[in-house]
Structures are given as C-alpha cells and as structure tokens.
Image (cartoon, rainbow, N blue to C red; front, top):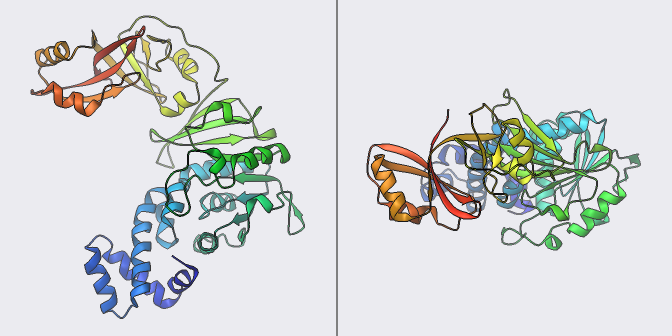
Length: 402
C-alpha cells in the first residue's frame, strides 16, 4: 500500500469499500473483488480495501474490537504487540511515574496507543512514511490522537531527551526484526532497524529505557544491570521486554498473561542463575511454560513444587505429588523406557493406546515420523515425552493431570 491508497481508504468512498470488503472477506477473493468493482469501486481501491479487510480479520486476535477500524501492513501486524501485553506494559510505565514517552520505531502504534490510553503523552517516531501515516490514522481510530502523535523520521537521528521543547521521561524501542521488502525474519541483531548497537547505546544514554525484543534473544546480548521479562499469553511465548535503569526491579521475570482481561496475570522472578537439584524420574512431570524456561527460572519454579530435574540440561521438572500451578503443565508418569521403537510400540499396544500427543526436549526425534512409525490403534490416549534422563535417550509414557 502507498500513501495515496491509504488516503483513498480514509474517504467516504473508501469507508464504504472497506465496509463492503469486510462483509465479503470470508468468501472467494475473486468474487469479492468482482462484487466491489461491480458496485463502482475502482480496481485499486477495491484491492486495497480487500487487503485491509483480510488484515483486520487477522488482527482481531491481537487488537480485539479496535482492529475493525485500524489500518495494517502485513509486516507491521506480525511484529505488533498484543493488546493485553501492551496494556500491561503501559500500566507499569505509568506506575513508575512516566508521563511522556518517545516510541522509537512505533510501527502501527500498538504500544503507543496502550500508553496513551494509560494517560501517557507519546511521541511516535517511524521511518516508513506509510507505516507512520497508518499509526496516525490508528491513533484517531482509537481516540488517542490528542496523546499520541507520529513523525516520519530516522530513530537514530532523533533527540530522545527533548521533543518539541518538552523533556521526555522514558524511551520505548521495538527494533524491526523483519526485512522491509520481503517480510522475512531478521536474525542478525546488527541488521535490526534500528541496529542493536544503537539500541544498547540508547540504554546507556537514557536512564529509563524499555526495549521489546524477540523471546529467543541470547542472554549474553542483554544490557548489564537491566531486568528482562519474558512474556507468554495463554501459554504462547510472545516476546521479551528489557526494563533498564530505575525501571528494573529484578534480574529476570517470567510473566504469564491470560487472554481474558479479567483473568489473573502470574509472575515468577529470580536471578536466572540458580540451578535446580538433579535426581531420578519421579511420579509427576511438570512441563514449564516457555517464559519460565527462557527466563532461566526453572530452579525457582522447581522450588514451588518441591521438584528436581532428571537431567541437568533438560527443563522438565519431576515431583512426587501434583500441585496446582500456573507455571507448568502437569503429567503423571506411567512408564519410563530407554528409547526403543519396538519396545515403545509394544508398551502402547498393551495399554490399548491409539492416540498420542508427543512432547520433546533434548531429543532429535521427529514427532510426526515417530507417530507414523508407531502404527497405533486402540481406544486409549497417552502423552509421550521424548527426553534424556542422566544423558540417556528416554521416553516417558504419561497422562495429563487436570
């Protein structure tokens, strides 16, 4: 999409085309395009409206009802923060006394909109003119244009301490991790936009800096003295946030956010350096949430269930009793076998197992290939855990604990 197409979509004719496209979004794309053109919509506007209708439908999972009136690019939607995560981050900034915020690389405005709704004055900076225009349109659509303004500029050349003569309390930066032309993921931090070297310097220059980064970021790359928080939503690990300077509260945090806004957010904190005890396989296995694992807080979690590891390098926790916990899924261990396809197949057939879910950590086996090779039939189901115990390839036959 270009600026002219975006401007056309924001006219009365564009709004009508968007409304019609939304009604046709679930049908055949060619038939939808023909229907729009048949209603007198120019081909270019029809194509733009249908694209936005598709993106708005996909964006509903991240933005909720707001998505119906917002504008998106495919790449921008991929990287945009989920609304529930952005709200929580904004609330923490507000509680820390932040009243003005510069959002470097604001994208489509997800985080800026949440901050503005929390009462923070946000100055967005976005290098791409179309994305910047969409962010401004989204500010209007969500009713925060008086507290969230956007300028098209290079983040690396922006004064992050003063905006329009006013001092800034904090800086937020979510470096682009997708190639602008292809939309493919960028794994080299030097190729981020802005690059990681600039981001680290930003932390050094601005006391209160917040960074959104990929959850797989190596711990060695994290700024010294900062807090890093790994966030999962309903069990899906979605991002990590770096809180620098006085915003840092603990070294590491795992935050589990529910999809339902009325649900409870759970947090596990620690140093990220503790090591859990190691022992034999016990009756119950806990599979920790991805945020707990990535934050290196498995030892802290194990302590909450009196658990231990069966292999010092594998993040499955074993305990003698089941305990309710938001931080892990619990399975009862029915059988522990050194891995052997023939022996495993026999054990499952003896139990009448015809359906299996397959979990794995520390195993090179391909779950779908194993499923085919087992050639199972029967009325029962089971959970198979492919792992290592004291370094040896092992399979655990389990059943979930409610």
